[in-house]
Image 1: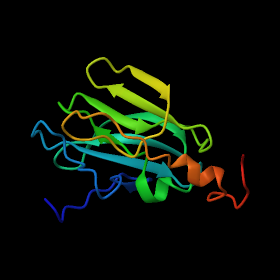
Image 2: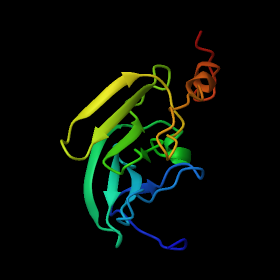
Image 3: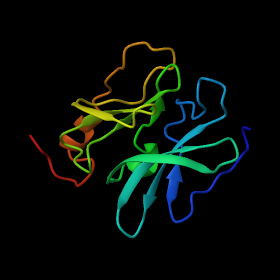
Image 4: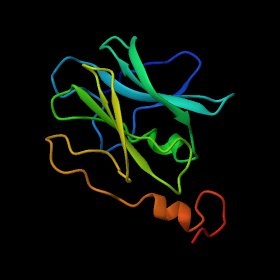
Length: 144
């Protein structure tokens, strides 16, 4: 499956960062991706089946320039029933993390920054990616 290509119609899509496995840890073949409507600047997280068909989507929000490099840092929880993702809704200076529960369809959002989640349930680490934006990475202006 390493060379498989899947398309989400009408969306610029990315699987996340290269260090994050897009395949569900439960062996189901499900795949995580994020997609953006280039006309509206809105994106969301997608779960695809092994054949590339969209099973569900969630986390609709505005994208920033970092989306085109990492998506929303979407990554599986350790048992494949939850998904973590950046949930800042286009505000890179005030990062948030979302946790979507596939069983209930509920999302919890907390303040914080993340660069993916470890695949075996280890603690989430914070890369302070938003510090780059505070220093001017996104718009060339310093934001104290």
